[in-house]
Image (cartoon, rainbow, N blue to C red; front, side):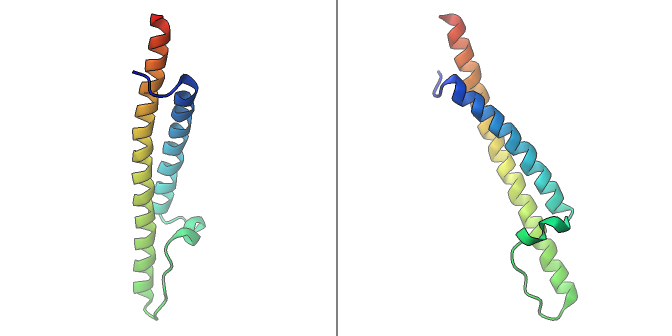
Length: 96
């Protein structure tokens, strides 16, 4: 049973696919500690202990990587729903 129309479901498929690709890649780059993304990690205060500072920065990178991967999984759910709606719309138009 279609809940949304064919154009909206196709838009959902395209946006979800792009979201999965982008967030997965960003998660990988956060996980490896890409310096270009350093501005987006939570603020870390330097208290004089360099090892603790590096540990806190790495925890921030890792948390952002996990957040990106969780968002990519949510986009995967949206992709499955949109693809089902696209299939249901095409199936209903063939049966008419």
